[in-house]
Length: 466
Ligand code: ADQ
Image (cartoon, rainbow, N blue to C red; front, side):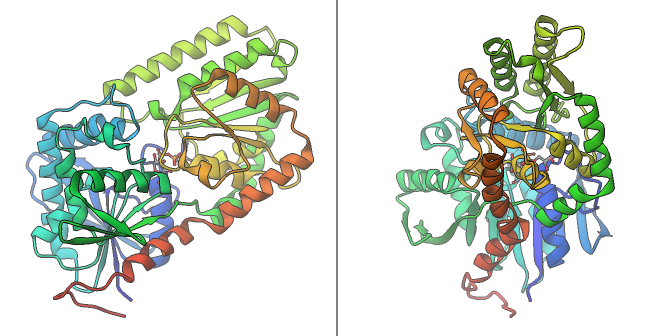
């Protein structure tokens, strides 16, 4: 069996030490690597005065990690700059928030060259390399420049934007061209994959047949492969003592009211402003029923060095304060707004205590919270998932109440429908979604991707193993 070399911006392999700042990607890859073994390479999250390429190895839960420190300028331009001020907003269709600066593009390129130089000696001839996400798009091309002939795959965890939006990026063509160095490129959904093909076809004359793109003398296999959660682990957590205790505490504190829960990194793509507006609309539209519910919104801050994240934080603090001030009563507060991380078993208990899960991103590659909410429910009395039709997860969780997150009226209607949905209908919808969450879990995702990668014929000169 070939070893797997996973390369991503941040590395995390210690069970129980995942933070929301690292996001769902860490959850998924930890589970995947725990099963397959192998090496995980990335940025340590630490700064160094001068980049040396010195690698820090450690071994956790059967996974070897290799990390490297970056210079402050790299972090400013590559991570806080190009990755989170340019690509993240652009790929989530927010060109109004995207910043296009040559220094950012240069820092991104430099950091990727540094990653390539550092990881290259760790890769053995039979290894398959799997590069993750938008921080590292040019890494495959950099490895090829350095002579690597191994199979290299790339998976994008965020949406792929429509061609006309992507074309606002000054170096869009160069960036996309680097993706042709990969043997396999994966997206969560057919929609993102089609957008990618559209760009490559219109700009480079690519042809696509049976999932194989031919472009500029390269062949790139394409795969729509939705990521899942570690459903087994999550079901165990949900059934455990800590989850049960937190479920009980939440039910007691709900005091007979139906809890609506939202759990998101504090990010403008998650549609939190629009969610609060939709919830307020529900309060206004339903004066009789409104005191029968409350919204618990858990939103730990992320990417705080970036101004747009400071702004969304201030906006939400203002909105939650205003809505509570305007609608609260002496015996009821409509929004509990919490900016904290919780251990996963505590989250499981909170999801289980909720009658409604509100997962309403404006645009999301997948959204693992939707799947965690489903996995945590009590099969006898499950809550209802209200899900944005613009999250990748909507393609699989078709029995959720699908909404347009930009429409306060649709959100308000969905909360109303969910809060009076009969038990039989809740069970029917939940079963359908739970089947999917269990079947298409993180192991299924990892296997589909790595099987597809391993089925790519070896390049001449590469060493193959069975
Ligand atoms: P994210 O944008 O980070 O991931 P998501 O998929 O929802 O979004 O994952 C968030 C993770 O953080 C979940 O596992 C959740 O439980 C955890 N989390 C959130 N708030 C928390 C809190 N307060 N305490 C503890 N944990 C918390 C990116 C893409 C997504 C894609 C994933 C995986 O943006 O679209 O689904 O990668 O590909």
